[in-house]
Amino acid sequence: MYQLIAKQKIRRGFKEISSGNFEPLLSQFAPDIHFTFAGNHALAGDFHSRDVVHQWFQRVHRLFPHLQIVANRIFVSGPPWDMVVTTQWTVSDTLSDGHRYQNHGVQIVRIRFGKVIEDHLIEDNQVLLATLDHLVRLGVSEAAQSPLVAAA
Image (cartoon, rainbow, N blue to C red; front, side, top):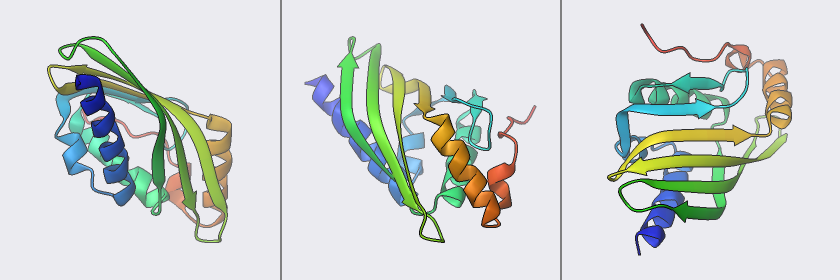
């Protein structure tokens, strides 16, 4: 039963992210969440704070304002007090010039006692980098910025 609930929460979270409504998802994160997005680009990062993750989601939506993320397959393992959820997903957007961005990735989430304590995202960086470069050519300077850094 808890596996079904976890899958529903992941799907709902992806819908919330797609709509730009991050608060319901962020409220499920531990304050000291360990959040990573693989790569070395404007969306890359290794964060240990819910506040920086919020900034990251804001940047994602500034770069991809029509972002749609869909869970294709969700796998749940472990007991409810120490669960791991792995999701294969597809992300897409249509950029201002009509260019279609589509990519695939994997998310590994660790949930302890109902709070997300780890969230690791891996997506095809070659596809993402090409799209970030395309955004720069369209005049979106933030697409060329360095990864976010947590305030000291």
